[in-house]
Length: 238
Image (tube, rainbow, N blue to C red; front, side):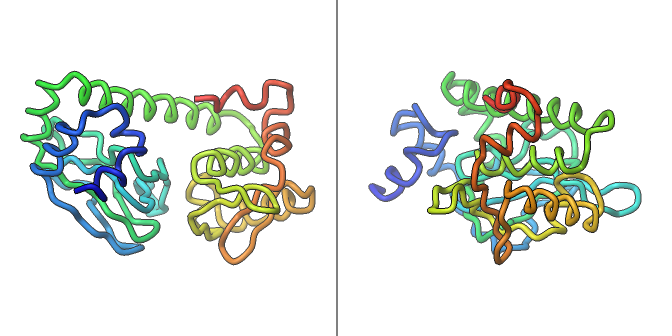
């Protein structure tokens, strides 16, 4: 139990929760281990659990009418994974483990019952929803118009560096493995297009790509490239 308290104490979703609330969530739920590449749920499923990510990374995506994958979110530890907690509709997205992951699955009826009686849990859920809506708004803004693919790619890598970056001697190391195909699915363009964009960014010494991992030598310079103004970082300061 001490290990559990230490493990989740710094995770965003659980921050500020009293020990009693954490214990109740773990008591009502059960742990799930998901291997890299495995599906946690599919589009069209009726979900019976609220999934809280404790370790690893997962991605939420859907499929276009041509069968292409469009990644909506890449989530790290300490986030609520599914967004249809009321359970009245089927989920519209797929959830896949990007790395080996561990999740706490709490039955929806129990989770909602705890949420209704615990303002702190309600607030944590609303904060997650607010963050998701803001990010979707930002994605829509980037999708519209004629923004160059290089700038879209730079913006996506900057955000991944912010969310999953680890300092290293060469800059910021993005922890999850990212193939060109996976990055293309995030940006919403063909693999060949995003590959050309990355080569362009690399020639400008804005990114490095080694063994399926990106390194950002200077995140501020990458943000300046994306926005092209002194306010380059303001769009992500949330």
